[in-house]
Image 1 (cartoon, one colour):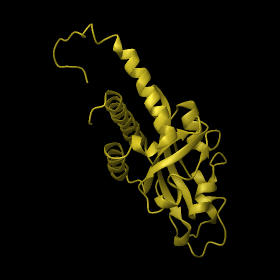
Image 2 (tube, one colour):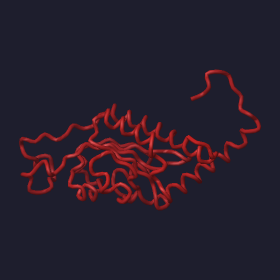
Image 3 (cartoon, one colour):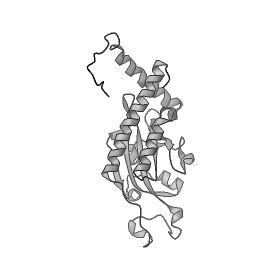
Image 4 (cartoon, one colour):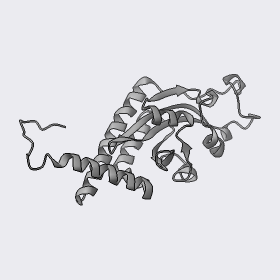
Length: 215
C-alpha cells in the first residue's frame, strides 16, 4: 500500500527498480524448475486454505506453470487425497478449464463440471470423484501469469454405491441424492482477491531472496 504521507523516491535507488524486477523474474523461473512448492509454502498456502474453508469449498489447489509454461503442476492442495497427485500430476495448459484460465487470464466459475466437455477428467478418474462445482482464478507474480488457484465441490463415487457407472447427466443420479450447491459470484470475488494477495506474498518472498534477507 502507498505510504500515508508525502514521499519521494530515492534517486539513487529508483534506477534499481527494473533490475530488481528482472531478478525476481529470474528467481521465479529458477524456482519453478527446481522446487515450485517453495514459492507458496507457509503464509501463501495458509491464506489460501483459510479462504477456501470460508467459502465452503471441499478443497482447493495451487497450480504453478512448469515445463517452460507447458503444464500446470499442483504444488499444494488441502484435501484428503493431496498426496496422490500434488507434485506429480501434470495438466497440459492446452487442456481443461484450468488450462483455459491460465492461458487466457480469465477467471471461470461453473457448476456441473463433470458434464462439461471442456473438463479434463483424468484426475477425477484417478481419485474416484466427480467435480461438481469449480472456479479457477489466475495467479500472477514475477511479472507474468504463473499459475492458477482452483476451488471445488466434489461428489465422491464411494458415497454412491448404487451408482452403476459414471453419470452423463444429472438425471442419472439416484432420485434421493442431492448434488452439492454451486459456487456464487461472491465466492469467486473472494478468491480473486485472495489470488492477488497470494501473488503479492510471493513477490515479497522473491524480493527477500534477491536481496538475501529473511522474510
